[in-house]
Image 1: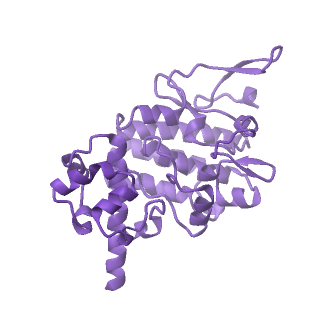
Image 2: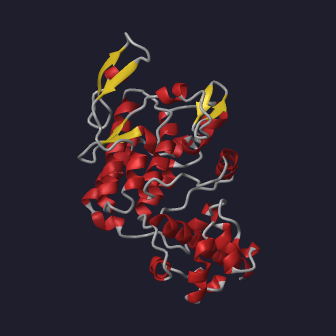
Image 3: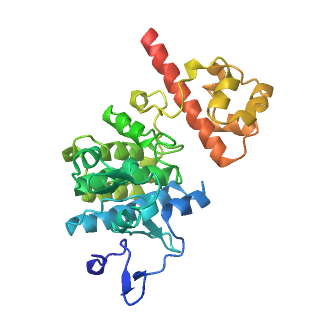
Length: 314
């Protein structure tokens, strides 16, 4: 399959070795390896325009594959390779599904006829094995989320079954930290339940090109109080109203080591904590980027839950 592809955003096949075992595929060398690992290693190091440039490359490669009537089925940041110029190339054309069959990795879940990467897969592909370019577009939306969150795991530590149930109930991933609303809206478009309503890759490429040409369109962030957040609550973060104290909440999100920091800075009630900004989180002494993200994400969800409760009371 790979031998027939020729596009700057699709990995180039150099040759195959069949005379020895195991059989080997030789491709062009991609200095920065897989996109998910590369982003985690460079958390927060790129401008929004650079990230959009990566997304544009991936979309361009996928448009080419779709135009060739090729359905990838396993589009995810782990299957995108990055070279020394930050050019992203689509790779792993379905091979991993066969290679991974004997693994205990929960990324691929057994289903009739093979293994499916649940977190990246469109609902109709999970339910009916209906794989199309439109189901690849759903996966592309998840890749967008992975890129904008610097390699965060989609749906965090929710189980695959919880993810399936949440999607069925119209839950969608919230915008990553500092993600422009135009990009999150494009993700939501890719995650339309009806596959006919999802954008085509040509529209996605055009959309991203416009953003690159007009960077001002990337300045607006999704306001946390906006209604779009209500169906997006992260179910892996417990309902804060079940906790009797901020300490209990910190324990629940596995950030208990910061209890004293919060208490010493007078962040001792949910009302106060729910208004915390990234500066506040830095101010209490949380210096690790991963911990900052985790706490901020939970604070945002807390704020959304508070807004929901208040709007119900009104």
